[in-house]
Structure formats: structure tokens, C-alpha cells
Image (cartoon, rainbow, N blue to C red):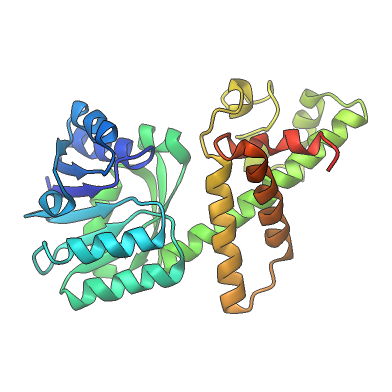
Length: 293
């Protein structure tokens, strides 16, 4: 079992660190928010007073932070405190450029590195069923895989440095676009007098089927486990979807890719967030389509 330093113990990082403890690893954790650190401690994570203490003597370090600037700041601190050969994994969802900079920093410090953003939301983090999209060398991936398997059910090596972030951005652009389409279809069905269940029974088993319908249906009833049945309490908050869509559009601009539907989805989620819905589940955007826009 490994000695692991874990930086960032929020809604995603906290349960991920706890699953590492359950798998038998020794986990030293740090978070700037004292209540979050306390909650992790109660579940078996050993608390550290600062990031450098959490990573001292660690064989593997994992970060789960909000933005690229936070990751680069944390890695600057971490890489001064770890031994050469330490594997540093970033599970945050950040821009590809910042991710590649972090890899360069790790290489300069003589460390292995991996960008490994996740899909599966808070439910997947708690259940240990996340999907990891990893970018980095084959050696780094091989060393990381057993640890990632303690937190997820599918671990995919997407390519070299930054490839994991690229895969995450593309995947979530698809998700944002598909949820908008599904929500529009259910609102149209309501206007036409078609029941939610009837549309679900047809679309979930025919050419309209997708994850946004079959697993995460945005109306109450057809999929009992979807947030629509719990007043849209977030599994994946609208503000986080907006963040990912913005990342996709920044990447599209930088690479010269044409993503008109991604751009439109980003604008719609920006409006939804501006209306005060950032803390609700991203599927709650259906309510905005029911209003006159």
C-alpha cells in the first residue's frame, strides 16, 4: 500500500481520498477549508496543517483543485517538498495549457506526472465508480493505475501530457450540448401534450437515446435516481458545467476548431448561471426553457 498526499478535499476530492483509505492506503490530506479537512479526518484521512506537510515522504501526490492557476500554485509548493521520482497526479478539470505547464514543472523536478480528470460526479466519487481520463507517460500511467482503480471503475490512458484534460473537455462539451437538446425536447413534448414517460419510453430505446435521457433524465419520474426527482440537488452543478464549456471554447479558439453547438451551450449555461442557478444541477436548465427567453 502507498503513502499518498492528497491536496483538495472538497465535494469530489474528499470522497476520493476516503476511498483510498478504504483500499488500505495511508492518506495525508490538506484543504484550506477547516470544516472540509475535519470531515475527511473523521473518515480516516490524516490531516496536515499545510500542503508541504501532506506530501512529505509521499510516494504519490494527488491534487483536486478548482482552476489551472490553483494547480500551478500548488504544484510549485509540492515539487519543492517531494523526492525525485515521486508521482504527482492532477485530477482537477483545468485548461490544457496549464496542465502541460504542470507536467513541465514535474519533469524539471525529476518527478513523474499525470493529468487525470474524472467523470462521474459526486455520486461516482463516493461510490468509487469514477472514470479517469489520463494523460502522461506510459510509466506514470502504469504506476498510477492501481491507485486510480481504488477510486474509479474505468481508467483510460488517453495519450501524452494534457491528453486527459483534452478528453474531459471534449466529453463534457458533448454532455452540455446533449442535455440542452434533451431539455428542449421534453419542453416541446409538454407543449404538444405528450407525457414525460411516453417520450422517455420512445427516446431511451430509439435513435434519441443518450446518457442525458437514459441515466440523467431532466424530468421527474422516468429515471428515479436522476436529480430531477430531488429538486435538482446537484450531482453535477450548473456552474461546473459552465466552467467546462468555457474551457472547451477556449480550447476551440486556441486550436482553430469550429464548435458552434458548444458555443451556444456555453451561452445558455452562462445565462442560467447568471439567473442564480449555478448551485443547482445542470439538468435544471430545463426550467429556463419553459420560460420565455
